[in-house]
Image (tube, rainbow, N blue to C red; front, side, top):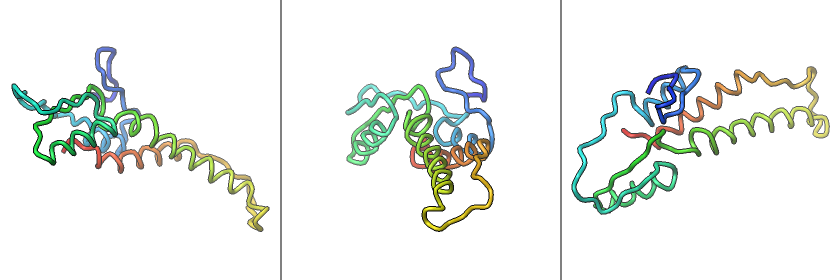
Length: 139
């Protein structure tokens, strides 16, 4: 996977390729990843390494099942990469601004109007996503 994936690359690009996106990539789609040698038989084949797929594969493997986990994009699925985790990080940012703007009702007075540094909010989002990706890791 590269930072600017082409049309034939199913893995979405991670832009910008900063320390947080590199950490995410290294955990959920390592550059040097090589698929293991396929077996003739599996007890379970899991298609999709989102939350449900990862839990199912790990649980079955922990009970001794021979498991194949198939994912064409990033481990962690939509929830980690584009859905739940990123949206909650942005919602928390919006909540902080809302709370600051409504502080007068609680006796909290802010001298300057609350403003959002979008680049910093996005960096926080990428850091949180990278931190959580350790639990969806291929390692």
